[in-house]
Image 1 (cartoon, rainbow, N blue to C red):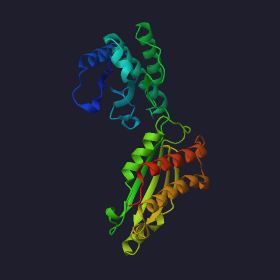
Image 2 (image 1 turned 180 degrees about the vertical axis):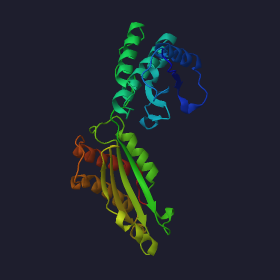
Image 3 (image 1 turned 90 degrees about the vertical axis):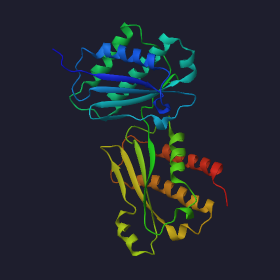
Image 4 (image 1 turned 135 degrees about the vertical axis):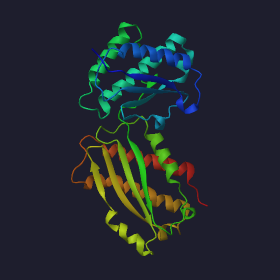
Length: 295
């Protein structure tokens, strides 16, 4: 007897409040629950939420996937024109096939509990969709899911005395620009996150010196697929520079951090560092040309 009970929901454009597609969301959920109601793939996952974005332009930054407290929270995009041009049955098929792609991501790319039978789950769901004539052929522009993403993130530490109004670049804006440009590109499977430890201190103050041991830290986290490089920014030197000069210091430091991969004792096996370096440099040059101007 199967005592495992699963829950699921399909949400279209969950970032835009109340949905106008509640009926087809419910129909897609009912079809999925009909498939899974007599299954038991393990108790570690008991709920699935499929977030599906229907937008003119794919925003990869909102494709967030997580597994926490039994909830698999997954996301993908569907081409807006194709979705809008489809009838109700076609829309439901698009939702179901998007969920299949998300389950493939769950089974092949996410850290899964060892006892959860994710590969069998994927295989049987595909068979179910095919048998019931829900499975459709589509290209990677109809349903969009990034399988080997890499995120770039600044990890900021600053000391007392550092004034934001004296630093003319916006790290959040630069980070967002970089990640938007990186979206859809692959550099291997070993790295999911590149962290730049951005440590800006007023070194004329004694309390800033306790952070010195962290400066130039280099780390490859194999278990969680990340690279971390910590770099020092001297506030007293930076604050007197012009806008373009400040950005050049930041850009050069980011490039230096990427090149520091060569200095690691243990390096990621599947990571195209030369391609990543060229790509980031190109993105920073694009940002500089578009946004950085002398004041």
